[in-house]
Amino acid sequence: MNEHAARPTYPLQVEGELDDHISRWLWLVKWVLVIPHVIVLVFLWLAFFVVTVVAFFAILFTGRHPRGLFDFKVGVLRWTWRVEYYSYSALGTDRYPPFTLDDVPDYPARLDVEYPEQPLSRGLVLIKWWLLALPQYLVVGVFAGGAWAGINEANGSTSWTSGGGLIGLLVVISGIALLFTGRYPRALFDFVMGMNRWVFRVAAYAALMTDAYPPFRLDMGAREPVADEAQADGIEPAPGLS
Image (tube, rainbow, N blue to C red; front, side):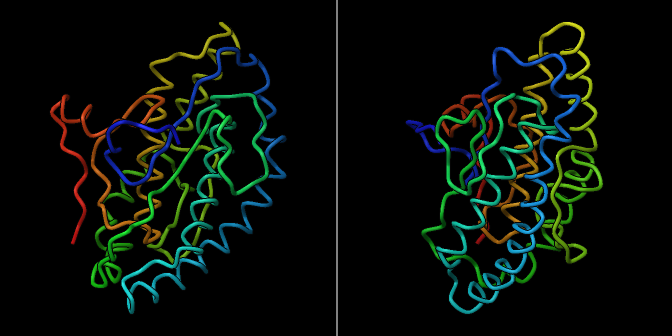
């Protein structure tokens, strides 16, 4: 991710740079172009779920999320975000997503999650993915629709999405604007980025990657807010739960 002088307001950072020149019509066929990625991501999310179950017991007994498993999960989230950004969760670029779990510094969409250096709560691991996250699931359900990016621990399944709900609706409106004007409405882009950022924060929290509860706010725009900026706007950084 981009290095900031101040720390981000949340351990997960989601960023996306809107391309200056986006095709008017390519978005109409991206659903076909992303099929190879969807096939790979189905298997990656199945592995993500299994790894999260293993991490659950590791945190319960040791307070630590195994680093190798953590890095794999970050890679799956990163891959998912690149595909979503290219397709129907943003339409922010026409550059085809790479097939890799690694960070790609020059790709317009980037995601990272800070590894928790302090031990995670053994008590919270028992309830945060279902009870504490339940209000967040309701919000995310509105944003992303029936299939949302992340761990749907409420029904014990994993899911991946490339659009739906309010995000999908606004992206379709943006696509129509592109088709007829050749321009992506910047205000819609910033709003869509805020909703996607919220979705991925909930995904990381539900996947036991952090104890920091996702804030109930939209951090809109291409870049993540940092603590100094958030405080200047009268917003406190998201607190962790102990």
